[in-house]
Structure formats: structure tokens, C-alpha cells
Image (cartoon, rainbow, N blue to C red; front, side):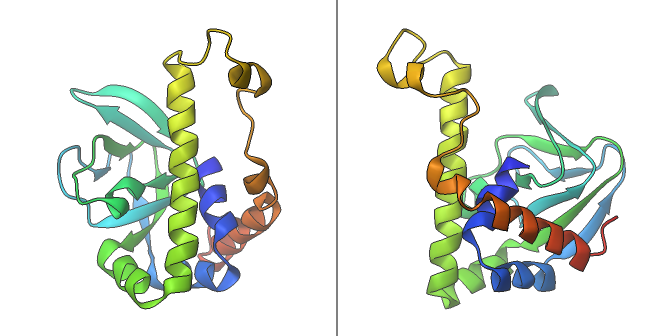
Length: 178
């Protein structure tokens, strides 16, 4: 759920209302694919319930996503095709936000764009740090890696977690997710 907390922690309540108004609830059957590796993506997804399986290449699983995870955020930043395939692992529910609708809001509302892109930057920085640690960089005794916990959350983000959790709960209630 960390990804949604990064995003919702930076957005405000009216932004979350906008997501609920302009996104579409989409029920997924087991195995249903919402992102195809190498094919252009037309939406950003927030997992509301269930789990998603992320694979690369010929079915190599690299991750499993739970409620609160985002899918397709990199395709919002650049126009490249997704680098993985994402499918439901059992029944799942997502909020699909069309990229064209999101892009129009980003173009029209500079304050929203600032909050949204800051949230994406925080999320992608966290992912890069996690990947770097997973690949073994920084484990050779450098000072910074010795002083940080593996699952440490940035202090600036930590302050927003309570609001983010409340916003995610409000989004679920608004979309009537049990």
C-alpha cells in the first residue's frame, strides 16, 4: 500500500474526490491483464481490492501488488510502453483513470500537477532506492547504508501517512469497496 500512501499523502482531499469522480471502478477476473508489456497504456490504475501479479518477459514474476498499489505510473511520466505485464491474481478491483483525462487535469491545474508530480517523484525515488538495495549496492560498509533501516520511510513522507491512510479509506468508501 506504500505507493498509494505516497500519492495520496501529497494530494489534497479535493484531488482524491476528483480521482473518484473521473476514475472508473473495474472488476477483474483471475488472470485478466490490465497492462501488457511493450504495448501503450491508456490508464493509471489504483488497486482497490485483491492482488495483481507483475511479470516480465515470458512469465517471470517480479512482484505481487496488493490494495493501494499503483500501476502504470511510469507511463504517465513518459510515453514509453510498459516494461511489465500486470494481471489479476484472483478476483480484483481497480480504479482506472484514463491518461487523457489525467493529462487534461495536469495541464489545466498547475497546483494539482505540482502535487501529483511531487508524489510520483517520491514514489519513484523510493522504488529506485529499493531496487538499488535489492541489487546489493551500498552494502559494502558505506556510512549512509549503515545508518538507514531497510524499510525506512523518508521523514517528509512520514508526516503525510495519516492523511494518506484516511484519504485511501475515503476513496474506498466513496467507491463502495467492501
